[in-house]
Length: 377
Image 1 (spheres, helix red, strand yellow):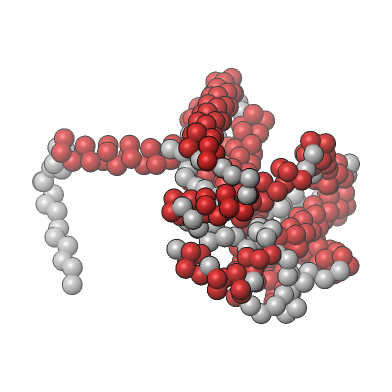
Image 2 (cartoon, rainbow, N blue to C red):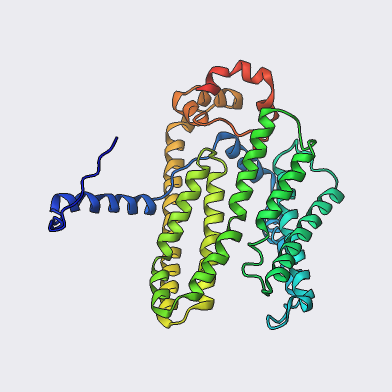
């Protein structure tokens, strides 16, 4: 049993010696370096193969069409929501039909898109017809506005604080019960469950800004101008800490960690910057945010140029060392490269991702039995 010795009243606290301060400074510097350094990661062979096939099979016009048309559904959804006028906060709940309609459509859209993403990412998932997806989305939207209606009528508060954040718990609970009730989402196999869980975690990280954004907005708007300036100075640390946390959560999957860390982390950065630019109470706060974004852009350009230079050097070394003894037999050249120890180790450093693999032979038992030692290594 631990014994706590009482401190004498007349005893004075001892001054921290330099030997005690130095380790604290060292740990703080290591923590900052841990946040500031570039995040490690590498793609698996299957995703590199998918990138290579896409590069050879897609024309420049197709790539341009993908870049221009992919944001189309999200743009149309935002235009639909913005076309619905907001209700005056001075009115009560009974006269807020337009606001409730806007909130209902937002909840329906937020529920529909994850179902479509899961249908595209998990091949064996049985989402069902579009009518079933629409019914599930409408039920979630009804739960959202019903939760806000109950809160407004019982407490007499309108608009409900954090209207998009408050119904998330009942929506999640009822949605989980409905999904659990319907057992025909996919086959009862460990591989399917692993893919399904992976996509669920990814969607959860993408939906997390719904929880963080309103809290950060309310906190920033409640601060005076001096505290807003100090909070804006902490914006780089907040962004780096969030990116590091996202990397720690998803680092087990080499094919998805880069996309999740960059996309979701950059989304947080855009949300925080937007809040500060819209609600800043001093010019100093705006200046800090602008300078930070310019510096971040220059660092990103430096990293891109550095990576491009390293890629060109690697290509030149490859041409000088490997390509000088090539023959006309493509199969012989491929097998000669694959049998080298360093190439084999890099190809199989991580398990090929069955989620993104486009080669059906990876899923067959004959391939696994024939190359079991190399795949496990």
